[in-house]
Amino acid sequence: LTADGRQWLSYVTASGKRRYVDIAAAKAEAKPETKPVAKPANNPSLSESGTYTFTGRASIKAEAKVSSPELAYYDKGMSVNYDKVLTADGRQWLSYVTASGNRRYVDIAVAKTEVSQPAAKPSLPESGCYTFTGRASIKAEAKVSSPELAYYDKGMSVNYDKVLTADGHTWLSYVAASGNRRYVDIA
Image (tube, rainbow, N blue to C red; front, side, top):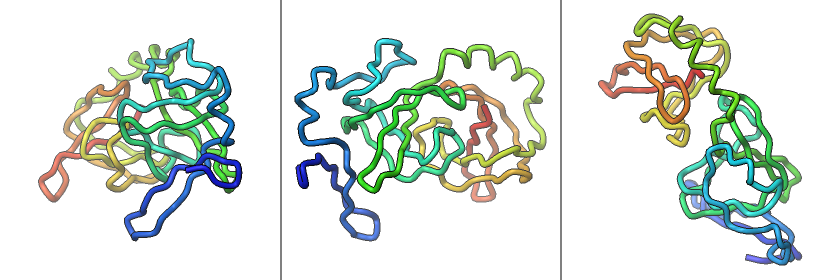
């Protein structure tokens, strides 16, 4: 919707309350660089500002860090007007400022510089005990877009029985007490 000269997204929270997200000045559609963009794999042709259309679920975060908690998310087909593209924490991020003045970040791709990381993987045993050096999300699937079920904080540890690479990341996996397999993104 358009109100107060701004373009807004609106949604209903799990508690049933309607929320609004300021996504752009109402005139934004007149900008020639504003266009839908398919999800790139660190696409250098992605303009520094514009409209990005998501091809899958993507987390909205307060920091450009994979370990930052998910505040909300965009689903496939949704779009956002962004004013910045940056690389941080081995990922490519879109960024924008909300109506409340807070900057938000959305992870869209593995950064090209992450290609050198697989060399570190062989030093990690295929099973064992892993101690976390920072916050790490526990997920039901080995996908960055999978919702966070819980998390491990710095200093906590987990016994894992599998190491895998999926969605451009290295994941530890284990079977929880519930009998469900869980995944934790470590790199």
